[in-house]
Image 1 (cartoon, rainbow, N blue to C red):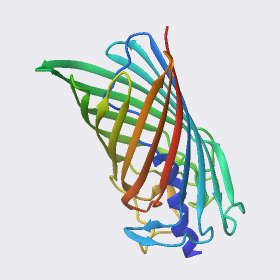
Image 2: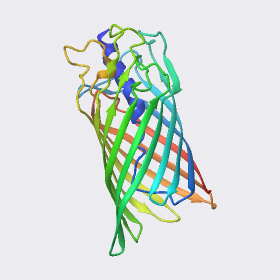
Image 3: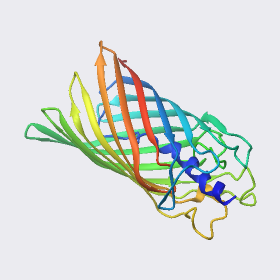
Image 4: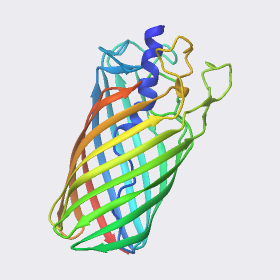
Amino acid sequence: MKNYFFLLIVFAFFSSTYAQGPVDGFFSPKNELSLTASYTSSNYDEFYVGEEKMSPVPAHNEVKQNIYSLYGKYGLTNDLTLIMNLPYVSAQGEGQPDPFNNTTEQKDFQDLGLFAKYRPASFDLENSNLDIVTALGFNFPLGYEPNGILSIGSGAFSTDLHAGLHYQHSTGFFTSAISGYSFRGEADDNLDINNGNNFDVPNAFLLLGKIGYASSKFYIEGWADYQSSVDGISINDPNFAGQFPETEVDFTRLGLTAYVPFGEAFGASAGFSTVVDGKNIAISNNFNLGLTYNVNL
């Protein structure tokens, strides 16, 4: 049973970290609506137990995830962008069933994310601009089971605060640094692991950095996404007793994304990301494709 305990929290928190955060340094023009439908393929057979790598994944040996996401943003003003993100996650284990709910698969909508991104100030520099970026966001869990081996999220409501800087040069070069803090609530103990008491999901510090090039014909960026839990317990701690949503989850991920517009309203994107360091998280490789529709309302 100890190996199953090691496994569970890796899956419970991984699917919320397959893609970079929804808040970046770019703002939509007033009345412009952008909708992106994307598909991400993810797989892993290694994970961090605490900070130590383990392979293969106990029980399941290898895990594959298919993630379908709808991401939308709308420019309420030139300085205020509204954002929505809704992922559907299907997780499939290749080995034994989950000892808690006797399944090798879990699929459901994950968390509905709603954000408002505001630019309080912008500074004109020589051949460039420097923007201050702030954002407030809420993530609503949508009823999935948070306490199984293939759980697709933590099951907790969260409130996220973000602030940072975005620099854009007239040549198209840009760079961004956005920091954040995520206040996370409680997850239900549906399987009576915690004697029916709700789990306290740890708060976390967040950081997103980007560097890239943007023009009317092409967009490319490299990014780094970082999370550090404020508290929580590690799954290799002697006092760990299956309180999986309360586990400390840290990670550093690196990614590359490219986007090409075609026609006046459509564009296509492709990307790759991987976990390069972490604690109590899957060491995953993620490939994604997206199709974007833009319209001025």
